[in-house]
Length: 213
Image 1 (cartoon, one colour):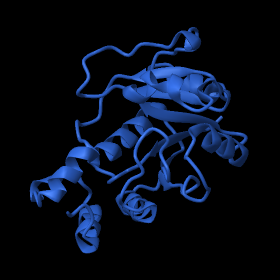
Image 2: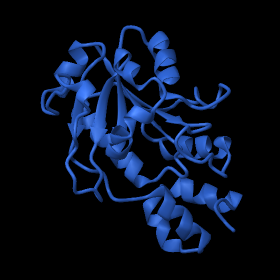
Image 3: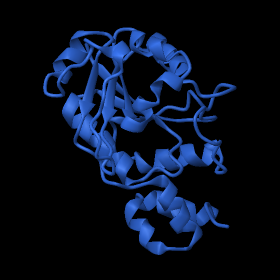
C-alpha cells in the first residue's frame, strides 16, 4: 500500500531544517506525500504568539515548489488542544487504504508516555523517530514497543506492507537549526538568520513584522 508521511509541529517558523528532513524521509521511505500539519494549540508547548494563520501561510510558502509536501490545516480547523491521536484518527478515515507514518524527534519520542492516549498511536500509524544533531545519546525503545522495531533499510517495505504498528529510527539527523534560535535572532534583527529560512518565508516575516519586539 502507499505510504503517507505525517509531519506535525508548531513551525514557528518553518525553516530549512524542516525541509531537509522532509526530503530525507521522502527519499528514504518513498512516501507518496508528506502532510505538513501546523499545531493550533500544542499540548506540550506554549501556544505560539504568532497566529496559526501566519504559521500555516509560512508553511504554504515554504513548500510551494515541492508537490509531495502538502499543507494540512486539520489541527487548525478544530477546537481544543492539537492531540496527535485525534489527528491520526481523522487521517485514517480520510486515507483508509494507505499507511500513515508519523515523524517525530527523539525528544518527543522519549516523552511519549506523557502524550494523550499514547499507547493507541500505533493502532493508526507507524512511527519514524528522527535523531537530533545536537544529541549524543542513542535512541532507546520504550518497553511497550518491544518487538515493533524495524531497521530503516527495510522500513520502506515493512511500512508499506503493514497498515500500522511498526517503528524505525532515522539516525541521519537533519541540520541543527532551531526555530527557537531563529526567533531570538529575528528579535535581535540578525539578518544572518535568513540563510536558515526559505526566501519566501523570510520575505513574509519581514512584510508582516513577525518576531519583532
